[in-house]
Length: 362
Ligand code: SAH
Image: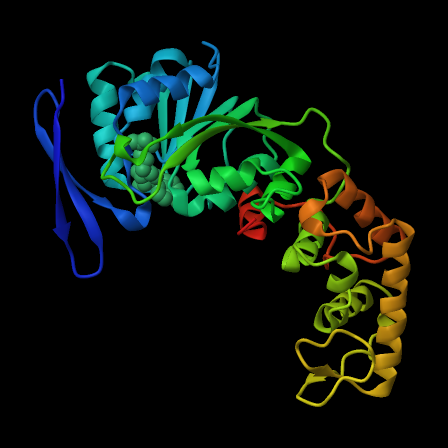
């Protein structure tokens, strides 16, 4: 029914490709923008596999992020009750509407013309999408930490990103992204997709993964958890003993406890500065941070408390890259029980958009 051709065109500041799309009545041209991650998935076999692996029920509302010209949307509409698509580019939406109307499916499609990161997600059962790869981290965060309950998310992602998402403790790709997601969801590998299946052909290969929210989620404040894992994974292959000896980090952490605690004692640690003089206090001083003797005393005390916590849980010689989220949760609760917190305001997230930005990049 439709044919496409494209050729490279160079603009001053943007590389893009021109796609010619022939619908029943007219021919439409569209320039695909690299900056918006506009790589259309063309292979119907891959599109069908994604739909099949998503286990869509006839009663389901599917949320699609970045529908583009609707290659996946049309397939989703064949099986789902309703598709809600969030797309940032009006030109794409125009073509999408045309194609969907040609097939008489417009009543079951709602398109929201917005940035998916800045808009609240509506209620949905499943997310199924070939997303723009540039927003993978905040989008996955928004899905897994968001307020919506959902059955699963089947996402086409950059292969390397998918591998990081799938990594287990001890594997080289294991990092903060994986440990944060594992707290609230299980990630299943579905299949690899060669870059040849996209128009225009991107530089990277892709993989499909399926994200399943966990039935039981640990009772932990997400902001506190993410601030904690950010601290632990600053040097993911060092031991926790070494990481928590880092002077600048200790100072920041100590200041945070003050702002959270007794206002009257708030003056002690505020007069620190950074210079080149030598460190004599036994702290790891990679940043050449130096303080008055009062501050050093408090800092040493604070470091000793932290060391005791690490030692009491047997964490001193462990490396974050080898710890499961359960072990890290145990360590966080040891810290919290000693009234040491990693995030300033421990409170619930106001909105999903706030969540996306708080965890970006995961
Ligand atoms: N799903 C389509 C198109 C994928 S290309 C297919 O498989 O063929 C990615 C799409 O995401 C593009 O249409 C792009 O305009 C859109 N997009 C990019 N950034 C976005 C954002 N922040 N929010 C919503 N859509 C976005």
